Structure formats: C-alpha cells, structure tokens
Length: 578
Image 1 (spheres, one colour):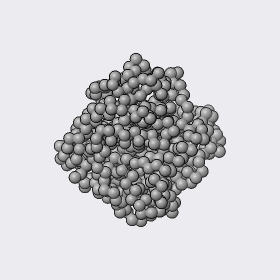
Image 2 (cartoon, rainbow, N blue to C red):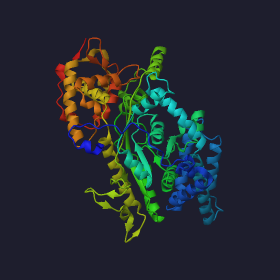
Image 3 (tube, rainbow, N blue to C red):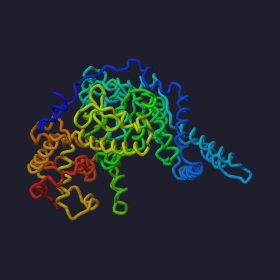
Image 4 (cartoon, rainbow, N blue to C red):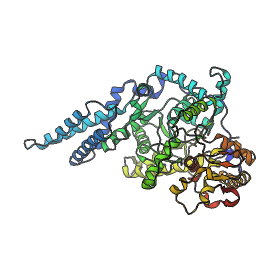
C-alpha cells in the first residue's frame, strides 16, 4: 500500500520505503550535471558575470552608482567588525580601487563617468562570482562517499563492525526514508529536481547529499555552504571540490545577492539538481519553518521561464523535505541563540552543554555506543508554481486535471518576462512549501513526550511568561507516570485525527500502546545531551533535567497550534516537590 493510500485511512500510520538502495540514474559520476557545470569553471563564471550585469543594469546609472557606494560602505563595516580568516588579504586594497574608480572629477565627461561606473560594477561582480562558484571533483566525491558511509555506520550502529554486511543493513534501517521515492526518481529523468529541506542541524547538508547518492541514486546537487565553514582547512578542501557554492551571510548588499541568485538560477537552468534551505538558516527554536527566504526560491521560477525561452520543455520540480531527529546535536546552542534574540534583557544564560570532562566523556561514549534513527520525509513533487505533478512530471490542477505551466509565463500570446508576476508566483510557492512542511512532517515519539511535558508545565504556570517559566528549577517539578500516559493518549487521538486529514504524518510506532510510545520517546529524546529534556526518575515518574531543551523539542509540535483543541489535565499529572 502506498503512503498516499495509507493516509486516507483514519489514524493509519505510514511506513518507510523499502529497505533498499536504488541504482544510480546516471552511472558515471563524470556525466553528472554538477560535474559538467564546473568542468569549464571559467566559462561558467563569465556567464554568471554577464547574467548578473544584465540583471542589475535594468536600473539607472545613478542607481547603480549609489548601489556601488552602499556596497563599499557595507563591505568596509564587514572588514572591521566581522573579519574571517578566509577573507582575501587584499580586501581593503580592492575596495579602495572600486571607490577610486567611481570617484568623479570635474574633467570627467558624462561617458567617462558612465564607463567608470560600469567598470566598477564589473569588478565587484567578478570578485563575488569568483568567490561564490565552486567546483566538483569526481575523485574527491568517491573518497567522501566512502568516508561518509563509514561515518554513518559508526553513528547509527551499536558496536557493530562497520565493515560487516550487518552494518550495511542497519545503516539502511536507521535511515528512515518516507515518501514517493519511485516518483522522485521518475521525474528526475524528465527535468531538474530542487530539494527544499527543513534545517535544524549542520549534519543536514551532508546527510541529504549522502542519501541522494547512497539511497535514492540521484545525481549530486549543487548546494550552498556557509563561507564560515571554509575557515576550517580540511572542510574548505573538500567542499571546494564537491559542488558547493559559497555563501557569505555577512554580505547583504544587492550586488552580492544578485550574483548569488544568478548562480542558483543558471545552475538550475543547465539541469543541475539543487539543494538549498528556504528557511535560510537552522531553526533556532526547533519549530518547523514558516517564514521562508524568497530570494533563492525565485530563481526556481526564473530558471523555468528561461528554459521555455530557450525552446526546451524540461521541467523544474520542487520536492519539500522534512528532516526529523530524536536529538539535535546543536539543540542547546540553537535554543540559547533563540532565547537571547527574542528575550533580550529578560534572557539569562544557562550553563553550557559540555562544561566538564565528565560531560564530554559521556557525550563521546554515547555518540559511539548508541544508535539513533534519522527520519527523512520526502514530500510530493510539485512544479515551480506549486502544482502537484504525476509520475511523468505532468502538472495537475486541484482537480487532478493536466495543465501546461508554460501558460503561466505567456502574455498576449507569447512568452514574456514579468518580474511582478513572478514575484507573486514565488510568494505562492513559498506558502505552498510551508503548508507541505507541516503535512509531510513525521511526528516522532520524542516530539510527543516533549510536547506533552512542556504544555503541562506551561499550563501549570500560566501566570509566568516564557523566560520566567524556563528559569524555574527542574528538580522541583515531576510528571505522574500514569496521568502523563493518559494525557499523551488524549494528544495521540488528536494527532491521529489530524493525520487522517493529511495535516501531518504518524510513524508505525503510533500503532503501539500509549505507554510504549511514551517510554520510547523518553528513551530516544536528547540521546546525546548531558542533561535530558525528559527522563525517568528512580520513583518511576518523569521529570526534566533541562527545561530549555524540553522547550526546543516541544516546539516541533507546538508550531501546529493545536494547544487550544486539547484538554490539559494539569492537577493529576504535574506535581511540585519542595
């Protein structure tokens, strides 16, 4: 039974895809589009420069000059306040040259002034293009493929010899892959696939790229990697050779962002699968993303229109992807960042996750000895407008009728560029992706127990705001085991109802008795944290060792806003110990 059919049955949990690896769609890595894209890097850089220049020159010369001046100002602030080791040593010299190029003298003619502005603009675009565009090396990719296989076997296996066949099987078992994989592989032969994942961990990019290759057999994607990661020599070496394009989040000026968008648009237009996080950065709160960055998303639509302009019928497909972990390695730092930003003067720093030799030792031991599932829920593929597609890549309207999305780009009987119109398409696509994130999200047992615990804790202290709530001492609050399980049963019934409506997904464990689901969630949550978000006390009841982590993991379910639909039985569940 397919996942779609299962979702039509009330409360019937979904099952992962078959525990198998799929053969590569393109056997030779040298034939992958990402390799073809960067084989002649210099030519591609020139294409990117030309595209960006044409794009910016739609504005007036005065606007361009002001844009360059703003860029120089912002770059000088960056050099002073946020210098990185990876920054070019001649940064200051370069930007002084750009400033001198646009300085006006009385003897300059209007044409000379215009030429100087254009030369300065070309200088800046060239510098950014050279910085952004990466390369792909087949030998390096094969090496990393071997290294990552060993790494994930070690991470996801409990003391099994990583070279054994059993380790291979466990690796497949631990990578819990959900979604229409056969359909995704089918449409990948008919166009370009853009993966749009949620983002919660620095492991995400590596994990997704590895899964595309090892499990799905899809050609590797182009993806953005934060320039800060290149400060670490070994990371810089490998990412420079694995198809990553560099993204410097310190740079917010329009010239840089236009060049970055051009990189995305041209690579998609040339048939290179792509991966980027539309949320822009890791979710600091633990919530599912609901506010997307539309800049790179707009390049998906621009690329499709340009493909039609070239007379080709290739489609650009969008696949939402929701990653779920029972634990997030960076959870402590992420929630601290979130609370610091939102709380400001109300924020008080908690102790670090790893402050002692003992806690570090515990972390390393658990990292090596404990297994953990990683859940990846691939969503139903869509076209660049947000319409679902069938197995052959044909777009479907809301009634399931075939439609031609080329019509979305036609005005007065011909293909045309309309930036205002495409801006609306981008917003609609963003809204659709946010909607699909929630629908494709698989609620883990750890999400359930953290949600139930934190909501009960919050209901018991309604007079306190979030920051006062998180400052309460953990060792004074306990959750009665039997009552907690009963409260969880109530929440599970609601989740099953929502799952039957296609608003979320539930895995197979939700077939089990409530007590089994609760105990599994408590055993899984925060496996590697030195202080557990929720755990079992020696008296058999439950309690939290870290309310901030509990809040972080709770947020995955809280983002649905179902709290008002649930009856919270506070008194018999939560009790306070003096």
